[in-house]
Each structure stands twice: as structure tokens, then as C-alpha cells.
Amino acid sequence: MKQTLARALVEIDLGALQRNGAAVARRAGVPLLPMIKADAYGLGAKGALRALDVLEPWGYGVATVIEGEELRHLGVSRPIVIFTPLLEAELLRARTARLTPALGFPREIEAWLRSGGGAWHLSIDTGMSRAGIPWREIDQIAQLTALAPPEGAFTHFHSAELNDGTLGRQEALFRDAISRLPSRPRLLHADNSAAIARKGRSAWDLVRPGIFLYGVGSGSTADLQPEPVVHLRAPIVEIRNLEAGDTVSYDATLRVERAARIATLAIGYADGYPRSLSQVGSVLVGGTIAPIAGTVTMDMTMIDVTTVKCEVGDPVTLIGRSGDTVLTVERVADDASMSPYELLTGLRSRVEKTYTGP
Ligand SMILES: *Cc1c(COP(=O)(O)O)cnc(C)c1O
Image (cartoon, rainbow, N blue to C red; front, side):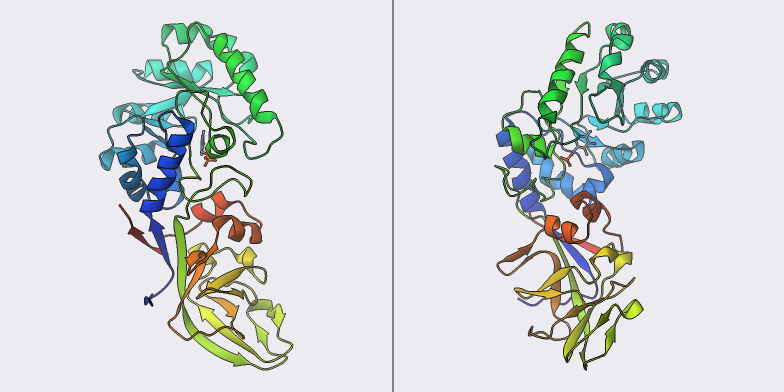
């Protein structure tokens, strides 16, 4: 099965995305609030909606008003929660698109009420120090929540993928803060992907999975493993033979010690393939691993195929499955010294997206 690619291409397996969503929902035992911020972690919100909406999620989570408006344009009628604090100037637009803001400080809640109000979720900071009312200051807003009760309340874990006890401590702080409100908001939520994988059945009313849906697990010891969703491929566009002493790419960081065969791929860091993979990353040619040779350049990347059978036009897999072998997002991100989140959201629009599945 040989496909011809013009340039780098990312295949997004919506069937796998859907099965990952179903697996998370089964494990958590409560409705989903899937995070499809940043255009579904760079994979395309439209495709993600197609895969996830049949799972009947409670709603969707985004980061900005524009992302929320885009979901409305795509026909989403479910609740859409914006998880990044909004400035007052954005509230009217949020309200017009029937978006649900996450609010924490009294000033934010008052501004929302002034702009006409509507459903909102109370954001409680239990250790991220990023957004939301610090749990110790919850009494400051108790009165306001009596006046305009939030539909939901949530917190966010900073280290759910570690088994270091902080998750339990953050949950206890969250519980304590909730108990100091005049009434319990109807929808409490806290679990991200790693928390769901770690804990199993959720103690809360909704769960907020993100990265797991897109095929990234939280380590080989986690009980729940996702199916790969992302397959990044690029064609070999040239092959050359080098002699001992020849150099490869900028700064000649690679000087071959013996005769070698080097293939050039039509993908580079302007496509979002990380430059930090220079000399340390690897790719799959057929089912065979081939190392990256020299520095990754803006538009092209060289690989060493001295011992690998291949020819110009062959598709090479940079992330995902080739034959029976999978180069996981986690593995590539680790080689690149970056987080899997950063790798996925870094894939650029020059990489054509194709979708398979439901
Ligand atoms: C992004 C995000 C999530 C999802 O986290 P994952 O680690 O991708 O599962 C959950 N909650 C909030 C508030 C987020 O910003």
C-alpha cells in the first residue's frame, strides 16, 4: 500500500479518537466535557466534533471566545465553557455566542453580571496559581454566588500524571472550598486525562479529558492506554550517497565516518517538526527505524538510510503507525525534549490534514 504524498501530511484517525473518548467515558462513569481548545490540540475542531458528538458529551471546553464562536458556527448547541479568564471587553461577545465563562475573582463575576450574565462556572485555584479564585479566598465570593449561583465549579490538577499525592491534596482543598459556598453548584469537575487514567471512576459530575482523546497516554504504567490518532508522514524527495568525511545539513553537525546513504524528507521546522530533533530523533521507513541526520532545516529533514531499503517517493512516518511499529507522540516529544502537548499543537497549517474514520 504505497501512497504518493506531495509534502508532509498528517492523517487523523477519527475512529481512534472516538474510541478513546468512549474508553474515557466508560472508565470515568460520568458525562464528558471534552477539551477541544486550540483547534482540538492542533488536529482540527471540526473533525474532533464529528468523532465526539455521538458520544453525547455534556459540552465542550475551549480557551478563547473565538474558539467558542467557531464551535457555534460548526453547529454546536451544547454548552461551551471557556477556561481562560476573559477580560471585561470580551464578555459581551461571549454572552452573544451563549458561551459559558470560567470566573473566579469577585471583579470578574460582577463584570459578567453587569454584562447580562448567564451560566458560568466557578474556577477554584488549588495549586496551579494560574486562574481562578485561590481556595483560601473562597469566602470573598460566597455572597456573590448566593446572588448568582454558578452552574458548575471546578479545579485543575498540576501533576495528575505523577503519583506524588498532590492530586488527593488538591481534591481535598477543592472539597473544602465547595463546602464553604452557600450551596453546592450542580456540576463539579476536576479530572483531566491523567486523573481519569489514574483514578478510574470520577468522584465528580463531569470529566475534562484532552490529550488522551488525541492519542497520548500518561505513561506505560497507566491502566488506560489510548489508540494512536495522529500519523505524520512526509515523502522522500531525494536520496544521495556520501563518502567518508562528507557533511550533512547546517553547521555540518554530522560528518559521516564511512560511506552513507542519506534521504531528504519534505518536512521541516516550518511544518512544526521540531528542530530539537536534530541528530537525536528517528523516523519509520516501512517498519524500520532510521535516525535523523544532521540538523532539521526549515523545509527539509535528512535521515540516514544506509541500511534501509527505500526510494524517492516513499512515504516516511515521523509520528504514528507504519506497519506493525508505532512511533508514539510521547516518544517523539521526549526525543525533542518537549511535551506531547507542545508537539501536537505545534503542527502547522502547511501540513495538510486528512481525516479517516467515522
Ligand atoms: C487543557 C485542560 C484540560 C485537559 O487536560 P489534558 O491533560 O489534556 O487531559 C482539562 N482542564 C483544563 C482546565 C484544561 O485547561
